[in-house]
Image (cartoon, rainbow, N blue to C red; front, side, top):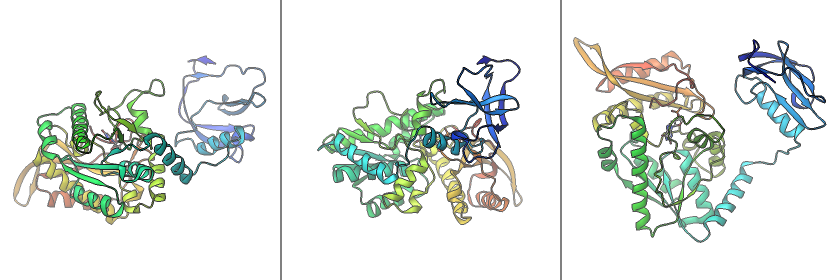
Length: 417
Ligand code: XMP
């Protein structure tokens, strides 16, 4: 391998297959791949053969006797066509793995290991209102029954009517033992005049834990805390894979204070969102709930840029509800990863009737994604966008302009803070 030189490759490239066996079995002779490297293979070790090239550069090679395969492009990214098939071929044909991993096997083995770990003790689960913590709770409930108590906190940062409707769903449909705690005054009090997003996250994370600790105390201090942490949360919050920088200190993991006294149970730590949804469906959850969009732990606090006040929260709630209603009406909920409004810390001039207005600006953030780690802005039909904009400006007092965010992730993040 030599570094640098004039043959660096970044971005899309066409790969030509010369040996369509094992790794490339069943694939076209030529396909698009995503390159990102500043070095190239100058000479192959003996026993290796070239499997594919891109413009004369070695793109794949193997020593089948030693069972070593190497790729110079990224099969895991969406821009590499047939990447999934390459990974599948590697696992099934090169490594001889069998397709034995099913959701029901996952549920069975997870429930068993939770039962072994928790034993006769009890656990507390913080429900966020989203699908992850609900699925985590259902798995633990399956393992230890009503020795699991769930706590659903109204932190004052939830969407319109969310606390009441989600609480009813947990109690009536999922039959979980849930305590609803209204702690909104405490959260909003501590958030007063806080503008820095990381400070907001830390405060909210800490306050959550304090609420749990109070509730836990009332319940005789269960030693375990259940959380719906997913694999992307783990990756983005810790540099488990070498040099990927910590992007936001968030995602359940980073928000926890250092002196936490619970042992964590995180049954979804190795799953992606689509897998969690499948587990939820398998556990009999209502599809409407399973396909809810992700909602960040710090809630609307990271969608109000600048300081969070009750007034700004109610403005954002109304705008956000309209975005949701219109997405639902257009039947687009499942196609989208998230759709929400962000309240910007600027005001702009407008005209309504004969009056000049000087009000807030809302940005719409509507994205498609597989796992939240990368995302694209949604190319929504213009009539849907138009309806949202018209309704928000007409119906929400305090907003006179709506803009559409057309930044993908990367380089943007999904949330604005
Ligand atoms: P970003 O903004 O990092 O978000 O592109 C990726 C996904 O994570 C969600 N998100 C959070 N979830 N606590 C959470 O539980 C957080 O602090 C947080 N910040 C972002 C975001 O909504 C998106 O789905």
